[in-house]
Picture 1 (cartoon, rainbow, N blue to C red):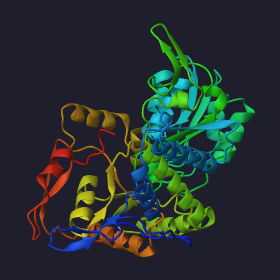
Picture 2: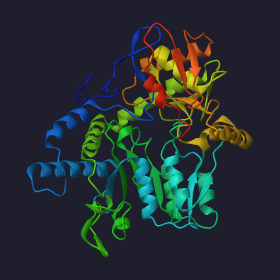
Picture 3: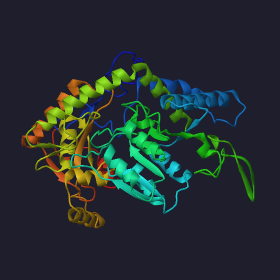
Picture 4: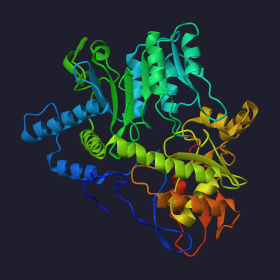
Length: 467
C-alpha cells in the first residue's frame, strides 16, 4: 500500500503500510498488525503524497535565490506556521523551532532557560526520559510521586510547587507513554502560573490524540508519533526567550556576521536552527497537521475513547494477565501495558510477532522510574537487575508489554490482539522453540515451517533496556 485518499470522515483513517503481510513461523503470511503507535506511527497517505510532490522541488532553504530554493523555503515556512496553528499560538508572541524530535526540543529548552545547578525544576516520576534527563543534568529536580496505579493529581503537584526553594519551572508530560494516563494539564498549568512558575509540556504522546495545551509556556512534540515519520520535532515557546543570547546549536544559518573574535547572531527562529534543516520532515509534519485538522478533534477523541475502553477492559478481565496503570473506568489514551503471569515480557512480544504477526513494544519504554513503580519493585530488586546489566546480562531485565493504537485502529484490530494475548495467557504451548539472547534479553524463534528470521535482526536486537 503506497498511499490512500485524503480521509475527511470520522476515524479510523487508513495509514501507509496497513495490510502488509509478514511471515510467521507456521509458514503463513499474515497481515501485520502494528500495536506500537506510542513509539512511532506509520504515515498518513496524505503525508506521503505531499512529500512525493515536494521532492522534485527540494532545495536548500533561506539562502538561495533560485526558484527551487525559494519554493522550498516557502514550504518550510508554511509548515512552521502550521505547527503554531496546531499549538493554538500566535506568531507574534510565540515561535516554533523545528528540530529533530521531542528529545532534542526539550534539551534545546533546557539550554536556553539558562538554569543553574541550584535551580529547582518540578517534574514527575511518570515522565519519559526525554522530560527527565535534560532537567536533571542542568538543575535540581523535585519529583512528584505517583500512586500505585501510576497517577498523580493536582494536590500532589501543588505540594511540590509550594515546597522551598521556589521552582524555576514545572516540566510535565501531557500523557504517559506507558499507561496513557492524562494528567489534568489545564489545572496544573493554572496552579503553576498562579505561583509565577512557567510550564513546559512534553506533548509527544498527547499531540496525536488531544489538543495541545494553549496556556503552557513551552510545548514540545514530534512528527514521528503523529503520522509524519520523516524526522521533525517542534519546540514552541515565547519569542522573547530566544531573542538574546547564544543558541543551543552554533553554526551556519544562525548568524548575520562572523569574525574570528565576534559573532552576531541572527533573529529567531533562524538563530535556533543552525545547519541545513530537515525540510522534508517539516513538510511531512505540516501535511500531518492538515490531515488531523481535516478529521477533527471530536472524531479523533471519540475514536480514542472507544478503542481504549475495549482494549483495557478486555485485558483487565483476562485470566493470567495483569494490566498496569489506572482503573479501567479512568479515561486514558488507547494504550495498555500488561504482564502475562509466568511469561517474560520479551517472550510475549516475540511470540505475538512470530506466531500472530502482531507488533508490540516490550521492556521499560524509556521511562524506567515509572515502570519500576508500576511493577512494584523495591530498590534492592532494581539494584540487582542493574548489576546484571553492568555484567552484560539482560536476560532478567524487568519490563512489561505495551499495546498502543492510533487513528487507523479498528475494533477488529483490538479483538485480534486480545485473542492472541488470551491464547498465550491460557498456557497454550509455543509451536516452535524460542531461545533467549542474554546480551539483549530478546527471544528468537528456532525452526518452524517458514523461513528462519534473518540473522541480521538478531544482531541489532529489540531490547528497550538501554532506553
